[in-house]
Image (cartoon, rainbow, N blue to C red; front, side):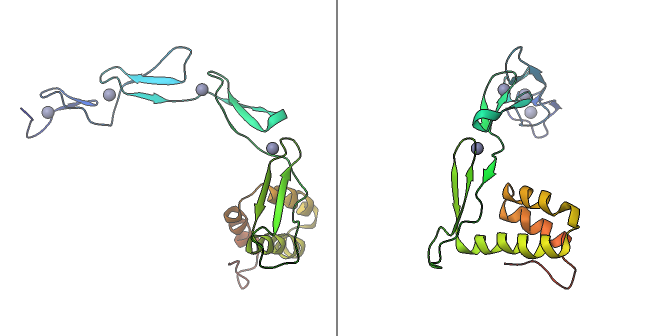
Length: 159
Ligand SMILES: [Zn+2]
Ligand SMILES: [Zn+2]
Ligand SMILES: [Zn+2]
Ligand SMILES: [Zn+2]
């Protein structure tokens, strides 16, 4: 019989035994990146610290060894074919793992505007080189957020 009003004790109703997906009592499983609720046995993944594996641009969990994508070291940014209809107007290539990411003309222009106008004209001179390097690793959305903070209010960033 289901209760009209459950009496929750953590994730479980102490009257009818129904489980809800909140207030679990997670216990860390030794040597694994898993935590298990001592009441309902729900298991969640909680990785430890991820350390960089620099040779292949991955990061590895110190506990279970699972890997995920880490930071690339971008080189040769802003290649541009003079055909404006091409989908891949620019690319970034990683010097370490050789991954090649291409992007279209609109993104090429936005990135170039960020470098040539936002950084060159409005960022502090001593920070410009560093900011251009950083921009290679940012998404277009992140670049937009930064541009909005750097540009004067009467010159909004948009695309
Ligand atoms: Zn109940
Ligand atoms: Zn539980
Ligand atoms: Zn892990
Ligand atoms: Zn890489």
